[in-house]
Image 1 (cartoon, one colour):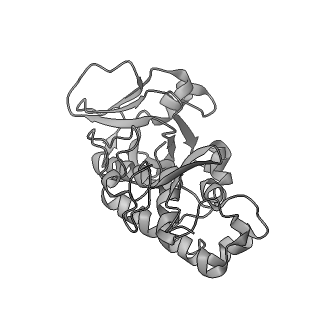
Image 2: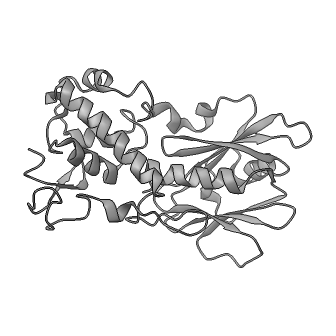
Image 3: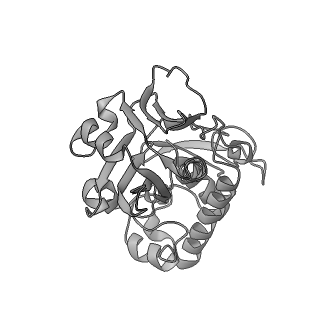
Length: 283
């Protein structure tokens, strides 16, 4: 599943490509791709004729402000969650859609934004103007602070994790604790912090939690800078995946020597997810 860096990469691509993009036509090829009330019919009616404005990211959600092209005033919102395999594609000229195409959007010049999703878990929402976004995209209500926000710090983690017996790896995967992190960057940040992933979260002291916060932010910043990771089905709007995979220290390096000490990278199962770590560096 795309994590925060991949979603942020998509956000930047959408913001760049869709400047002043007026949706002249929209087509939903798979009804389940639309999760908002009214289904595909209401979704298309809400988006067609509107200008796509600023895109923002919240956790792994993407939300675009829709604008009335005649007045420039807000007219609603368009929400997207890529889930496991969802991706946007930009097509300058008309082309035949592949079998996994779920939604298509055109402007007056027949340039197309296409939503492709092999596993079909991705979702989109139309939120009418004046309606609280969280009341339609209900998953937003459960999100914790962004890793880059002032609210995400060692003091916050210590309070939230006090007495917790679950592993710190499981805690970092919890979107209600911190929004946007996932399996890849949880592994990488715990390695950078020198903390074993199976450590009970409630046993970590303030100094260790500071390392967790700093390492997570640092790893995410690096990955955003190189456009995300090569380890998933993720592609940006131009069909390119990220370059972070070549910089990973532990993720998917089972049995290979640790880049710091030479110890073989180990893999265990935590919170139902494969977890990669160095038994020497992460004691």
